[in-house]
Length: 320
Ligand code: AMP
Ligand code: MG
Image (cartoon, rainbow, N blue to C red; front, top):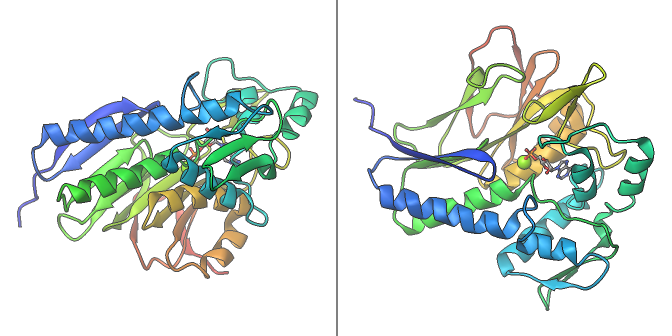
C-alpha cells in the first residue's frame, strides 16, 4: 500500500511552532484552524498586557472579573487540578513564573526572600470562582493566574472539535509539544518523543497512536544555566524552585489533550513510583517517563505502542 500523501501547514503561535497535517490539500481550512488558535491565545495568554486572563490578574485584590464560558471552564478545571492532594500543578503560580522569567529575557535566580514573598501569593484557594456570575476574583493584590501548562492542551482539543465539525476524519495537530491526532491514515500516527537536552530533532523513541493526544512536558524545554546548574521552567509550588526529581520528561497519552497537559505536570511532581501507582487507577491516562538515568518507564501500553530509537536508554514497565 502506498503511503497516503500528507499536506502540512505551519506557523508560530503561543511562542511555539504549530503544525497542522491533513490528508486533504485545504489551505483555507488550515488558515481557519490557525485563526481559531489565535483567538484562544488572545483570551488566555499572560505574556501580553491584554487578555481575559490578564484582566483577572490586573484586578487582583480589587474586584471579580467576568470572563467567557470557555475561559471560566478552563480556570475551574485548573483550580480543581491544583487542589488534588499532593498536586504540584498550581494555576496561581504566576507570581513565581514572572519572578524567574525562565525562557524569557532577564531570567535569573531570585533571592530566597523574594521567593518566600511570592509563595504567599500562589494559593489556589485564593482564586475565587463565582459560577452563577462566571467571574474570577484573585483575593490578594499581586496574585496572577498562569495557564501556560494547560492552554495548549485546551486549544488542541478545540481544534479537534472544529476539525470534526468540518468533517475531517484524519489529522495531526502539533501545538509545540502537544500533539493531537484524529483517526490514523495507516492504522496509527507516529509521534516522536524528544531526547532531553539533545539536538531538536533527536528522539528517544516513537509512540504510535490513533485518535489520541500525546503531550510531553520536559525540563529541557525552557531553562537557563547559572552557578553550574540548570534552572528549568516547571516550578515546585511547595518551595518556589524548579522541581527537582529523577525525571527529565513525562509524556501522556490520553483522549483529551487537556487531560494530558494536567497529568504531565501532576506526574512530574509525583515522580515515577507514585505516578505509576496512580495510573493503575486511570485506564484512560497512560505515561512514558524519561529519567535522568536514561530509563524509559512505560505504563500499561493499552493506548499506544512505543519503539525505542536510542539504545543508550533502557525501557521498562511500571511495576507499581
Ligand atoms: P508545560 O510546558 O506544559 O510543562 O508548562 C510549563 C509552563 O507552565 C511554564 O512555562 C509556566 O508558565 C507554567 N508552570 C510552571 N510551573 C507550574 C506549576 N507548578 N503548575 C502550573 N503551571 C506551571
Ligand atoms: Mg503542559
